[in-house]
Amino acid sequence: MTSIKSDSDEVKKYKVVVVGSGNWGSVAAKLIASNTLNHNNFHDEVRMWVYDETLPNGEKLSNVINQTNENVKYLPGVNLGKNVIADPDLDHAVRDANMLVFVTPHQFVEDVCKRLAGKIRGDVEAISLIKGMTLKVDGPCMISSVISKLLNCSCCVLMGANIADEIAMENFSEATVGYKESREVAERWARLFCTPYFKVKAVQDIEGVELCGTLKNVVAIAAGFVDGLDMGNNTKAAIMRIGLNEMRDFSRRLYPSVRDDTFFESCGVADLIATCFGGRNRKVAEAFATGGGKMPFEELEAQMLQGQKLQGVLTAKEVYEVLRNNKWLDSFPLFSTIHDICIGEKPVSAIVHLR
Image (tube, rainbow, N blue to C red; front, top):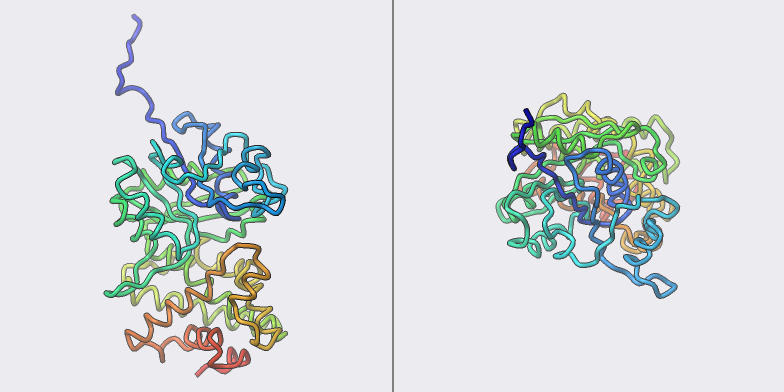
């Protein structure tokens, strides 16, 4: 007897949109696009919202991406996949999407979400690849919480030892998906990102995973200072150890539920190591130290990052505000000193003279 399938028997298909198109956003689109072609519960097409720019030759970045399958500004030389479609119209890009991947600089995410509020599907799920936090009147707020509250949706996070250019070259890497309640949703996100060279594990500790990804950028600034002062690996290792302890203590003070074992996942110690030896925060902080702290970070960012944003200095300021407001400054000498150096109140050499 031939069975007849009802509508409820059909596999639910998920339409994925990447909100952001910088270096990491482009790599995320590449990972996702390779999987949507191979899993029948995802639509093949992956739209990527592009904050459009005019390139030196007069062409629009979004047009060039669609013509070449390559983000020539932020990820040159890497094919994103023929099913990645760049879209400069945010409203159009997210239309009918039920999986949103947020990967913008953290200072822009609130404005992006406000633009999207009321314009997305009711069953949408989100994930944040964004490192950072925002400060509200009642205290710090994680980016995943901003997204969840403004869009009225669940939001997981993906963090890890993920230097984007290395993943683009398909070198083996790992990542951690942090989730609050639904393991089924977290595993779907893991399946969307996971490839033979990019392994993803789901952990039920969204605050711990996200804070690891946020705070390691602050420690990377300190690592860059050490490199710029040519102090060597012993000093750098010491700063990283102190930084890891302050990351854990800060996280537990904000969220007592944060698990210690989260710091041993890719989002924790692995990401800290990768970021303190590579990545833009360490690189720019090294240049700051080499120049004696005379050139402001804003100028170094403009000169060195070709339009990408430096997250560590801004996060250091936000962390400092939390410490000051809670009278915790004496308990976090490394975090406090990093901020003081960044704003010129202390010399770079203070990084090894913690109070």
